[in-house]
Length: 269
Ligand SMILES: [Zn+2]
Image (cartoon, rainbow, N blue to C red):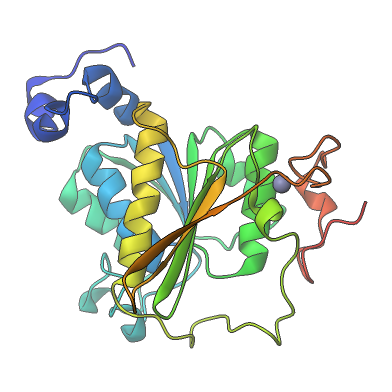
């Protein structure tokens, strides 16, 4: 953290070091940080590119999936030659090409309540690249218990949303207390997604993660930003902490295994 940048680093990051509000201390903070990206599909692909390019020192990547041909229209860190390969391996190869000095920790596992604590260990920020409510509730709850900021993102067709849930403020459960009835929402691989939407939202998630890590700018707080590419709109919605929230309220759960993540993810009090 205190080591000054070497000549290669000063050159590599010169364009962001040239910003008045971004100095060597900010760059050193990025280089010494570890970010967990859960899911390297569309959102995770976009986030990983810029987290690595900007100089995050260690990227921990969790994904249990393999690359499919139908992913390539939007999951841009994976290529045709990666079809059939684990996504974590494909992501690691991409990062190695971009910057061999980035440490990559591959976790080829599905996010579950038993393994999430290990995934979050020694992590500074977690970026949401998940496509299930269950996974997202597990990560939200575990991240809050661990005191780790959670940069949420979600997409559907031409629409997307993102938000930052940091200790002391509202969490994902304050936005959505429980998972909706599976009958009422589309989910999983067959849902339609316009190619660029995960790129847009994933880049915005990376932007917030980098701001938090580097200590620059004002983090997105207490609001959700929703975008709709069909009419090119971004809309801010205020988000308040739920005083009865079982995760960020005054009487929070003490273990992520308190939740029922098989069903509607509700936490009974
Ligand atoms: Zn909450």
